[in-house]
Image (cartoon, rainbow over all chains, first blue to last red; front, side, top):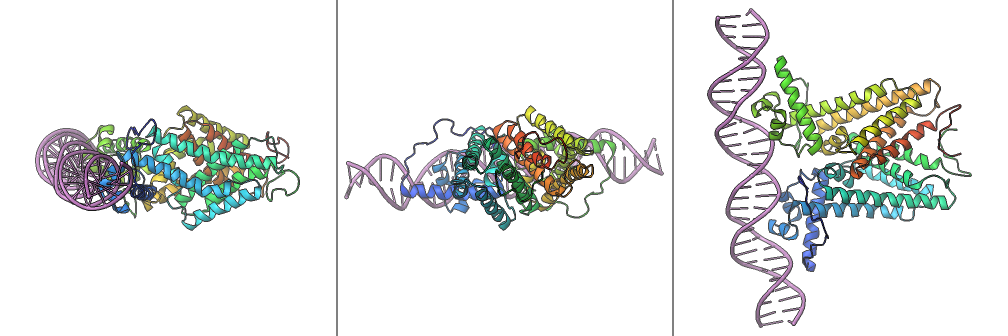
Length: 223
Length: 223
DNA sequence: GTCGAAATAGACCAGTTGGTACGTGTTGGC
DNA sequence: GCCAACACGTACCAACTGGTCTATTTCGAC
């Protein structure tokens, strides 16, 4: 990912047989690298740091990964999976405005606890790598798409349940909400406060609330 | 800004007398560095690259800047000023929903032209430096605040003109809009498409439009 | 015109970085 | 129990990186 970022283009699994112990070591390496990269960025993380943080050795690192690019690719996969896994419990069965607000609350709480430190792991990877490694960009973009589709599904369920207007495009709303999340995180990181995240998500969610039909009018909005 | 990022803490101007020629050279260096950093990040930009891109020499670089940190600080200042300068014509006298939409259009056009490449210069600096250099974070955060205050002023003017509801908090809306911009840019960068930016800004602006009083109902929204 | 400060040139350096070489220990399947 | 493949340890290296040093040229003020 350093410059051109070749990174195994074709089929991903390098087909290297791993023993149970090997798989464990590999995992320790990726975890350590993921944390370091989240804190210091890809360019700001050295292989030696990964070696030390993971308690392994140089030969092990290069035994499991061809080069830094390969390691970064593994980190991207782990981080996107991690984030999705963290969101899933909330988004999996999202089907109401209340559920959406609970999701918002969980995020704001999370960001508030660490004062926005380091930002979203996927978001920071996106800014650093999108224009510097095409394979990385593809992975990250896929993660965003998948993330959006969870939101889209949830909003669609609200429509099906008749809670909100059926004519609006759920996918459009989903993109807007994800953008609010990423932008809110970025501002929260710079401000060291969860407030921008809270405001951004509130604003985005208000658009969905505005589509509510029947009772329970949005607590704020105009008209 | 590499690690701890000391960066001149107190009064900024190093009080070094500059001749006209010197100021020009210094400027060339900062410009070259800004472009390189926008494309490759701070950690991904070397002093030698700056030397070559600016057509200067090592001694000149270190004649005008104590170290890399100082150069990065200058770049931050230039980029935040650049962005503000680019937005000013639109935001300076922003006072109507129509003006807000024009601002949106200009941005979407800009992002579309380069397919989101490299993202917002200030945004990428924010993600890379916010947690790695406190002085950098402060500068960047100040830029965001100033940016928001332009939006806030514009929205306030709409309220004063009676175009939109007076009770809503203009600053809150401004934060949300800026978050939509940054998040939209990030997603546009990863997707290589201006669409996320367009959707994100539309969604954010719709919140302002929803506050419109009198005629000209928002073209989309529900109820 | 002179003179000190600013501007420029470019060789040089020590520490770091990604990556390799080569050797030893460990294990799981036959 | 044997042995090939996996797992691990560590010294080593060439290239790069931020930064320094000394010397030369240019220029603005007096």
